[in-house]
Image (cartoon, rainbow, N blue to C red; front, side, top):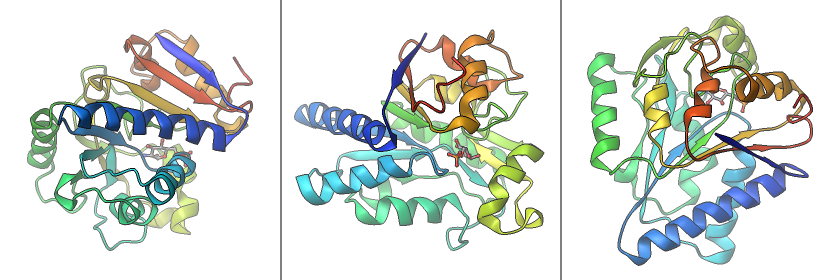
Amino acid sequence: MIAIRLHPDKQSAAQAIAREIADLIAIRSESGKPTVLGLATGSTPLPLYAELIRLRREAGISFRSVITFNLDEYEGLGPTHPQSYRRFMEENLFRHLDIPAANIHIPDGLTKNAAQNCADYEEAIRDAGGIDLQILGIGRTGHIGFNEPPSSADSRTRWVRLDEVTRRDNSAFFGDMSLVPHGALTMGVATILQARRIELIAFGEAKAEIVRRAIKEAPSAGCPATWLQRHPRCTFHLDAGAAQAL
Ligand code: GLP
């Protein structure tokens, strides 16, 4: 069941989700529990990350009890590569918050043993008690994380080949299509669906058609975001552009 929340602009969406995260941290830390967040990259979550940074700076909210798991990482890109998701997260979120470094998890794009690395990632999520709240964007292929079509509902953290549409969409960041990696490590659909709460964010007309498909089409591997319909607590946060085909 997907709930839809329409926001007047990106900033309002960011504020609503940041408030939800802050409330969750407050409730869980009252009983001494960590808060496990699943985090996403791409341009869509940037206003949310800016808002979390503002809450840290201006409202003094602490993120010391937070444990994070990012959805995905490009194959072959290490922490110093300007386009790696590790670097993206450091610059746009982690370096501005007080999350202990040991609590931060991102698949290792430089691993020589992807299968082991992915199995270890699943285990680390389990050991942390599972993800309390997962942030998601959506790609125009219907991917969540880097679960390109076809991705089954029982898929787990693994190596995937990137769709050419995705490589083209992300090539702007790399400057040239030939520099975009062909593969990635990503949490699986089943990994994502195990999060206790999911907040998907989509802004702008370019996402309208895939948002419509994700909500209206019968769940199938051909549009991985449709699997979110099977989640008991998933909200799509949309602006008017992204909601226009509904
Ligand atoms: C990448 C990420 C996804 C993200 C998607 C959309 O492919 N792996 O997690 O949702 O881009 O990106 P954007 O938010 O820039 O539209």
